[in-house]
Figure: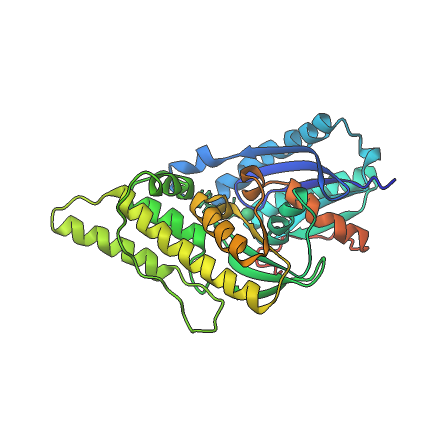
Length: 334
Ligand code: KG4
Ligand code: ZN
């Protein structure tokens, strides 16, 4: 019986994480140490602070993942680690920990693309069915990725400016909400009936690309105009209007791409896939369209190492191997 056990490590941004994944889909352990509290007062992730936290946490997090799984290094087939993209200082902590562990226990090492990880979070919930379309929406990414088979990624659309999560975080700042703003705006958007109408940015008719900076500016201008007139904005109406614009554009483009590429499965991935409004909208259109749609549970949407282990397993099985020369690749392409 197949028993491929992988230790996976993720440290590309502000979570220090390690997990043990069996056969690419079974979570044996999944440990995440979040640094959000340390970055909150700066309104965003401070790279130098992130690196310091990773250094402090990484050994403990790896030991905890092994202990919770009751797994010894000798039980492992490989060590997987996020190779990029991300903050270079943050990436290097995970990569060096992975290299040291691999060297000490004579294990192969597999470097994983962070976004491939987000997409493969779905493999921890149900088998991936190809051809597949993934909507990747996080703090750093907004991409539509077409996958013909395991390991094949074609980016058919991407943001031309801000990522969806970045727009959420910036609008949250305008509303004086704490970082990360996405979850708070999502919550506010469901608390009121009224919505301010903001523009939808569609770009060229046949484009699968996105643009969110204009929407962000529209929210800033709206607040500015209200301030000048001495009026009060309604945070719930702004949150609801902003979220409606983001969700409508993401849903429409994902549906058009799913039809054009005749995919069998559509999945959402990344931190913004945790958004209740987006989930409900995608679920509704794909139920009507008759295309299977999945989004992993909240805990697997935001950064974690289980998803890195899931993405690494088919790579490991296909013979992909890194080596001890591995370096952080902040701008790594999918
Ligand atoms: O994937 P992730 O954990 O980290 C990156 O790789 O970027 O995504 C974090 C992003 C943040 O911008 C955060 O505000 C956003 O995901 N986010 C949300 C929600 N939960 C997290 N955005 C909208 N609605 C949410 N419920
Ligand atoms: Zn991420």
